[in-house]
Image (cartoon, rainbow, N blue to C red; front, top):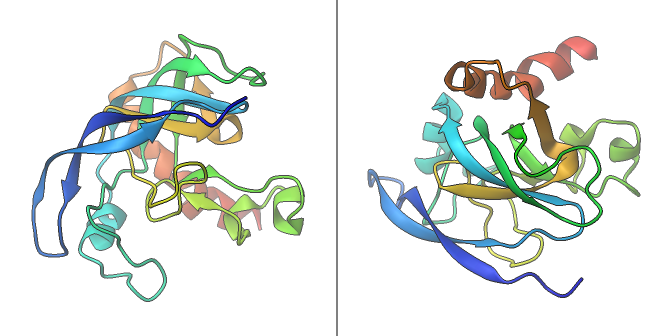
Length: 178
């Protein structure tokens, strides 16, 4: 597969640590082999989003501006890469705080603990693996994520209520599991 092309989507971003969120346009990319493109229908608002855009976590996760938060994402899959197996176009999907990681070589990833991996790619505040530059979150029209980080959702769920639950995966489930 050749290098994916970039396209622009509408988003809400903060231009600085003191500015309000405002309409903006950000780059996204076409899906690669194992990626899922999702049209965002709902995105929860979490206190973490506010800490990020205000750069209050600068020591561990410095904000790069414009900053687009949002890690409680629910939407409809619009396109999948040719090697995607667990989700298809038209499915409903959710995305939490990660959109990618090594998954093959890292010992944390091999053990199913991507949240501890130095290779993890945050939904925002990470480095976009194909285009370079920062990853932008779910306060946008669409997002592209590795299929491993997209959760297929049943159609009967109230999607606006499901979005905020996607934060709990890393903050609640992982610590309880360990």
